Length: 122
Image (tube, rainbow, N blue to C red; front, side, top):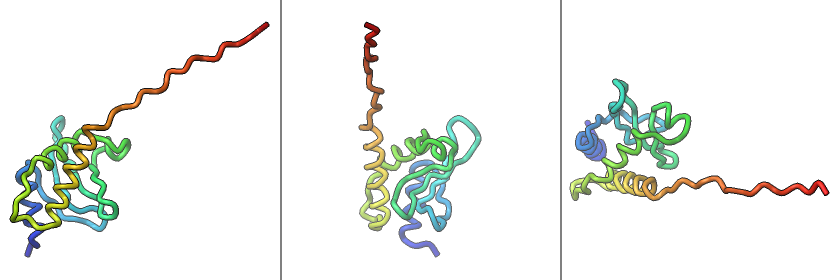
């Protein structure tokens, strides 16, 4: 029998076009999503230890950034907080919303432009 949280997260997964997959020892709130550019499926999840969101795709594994995670966080941030949701589900949605908004405000920092020192051959 599913817990209320599991049922709520499953309903959220359906709302965002994903499928809920079982949690494991390391990851929770695990959503299976299909890649928009291939026939592959990836898992978007939240690490239990520090609540960081991650993706099973090579981009996130190698660079800690990917379009799948950004897309799912965007969809999660748009899910309305229902009074029927338990506190863990509301916390998960709030976390996704915060991370998504933080991604939107992050700006790339250009490398500083330094002038090469002039050499004096005098």
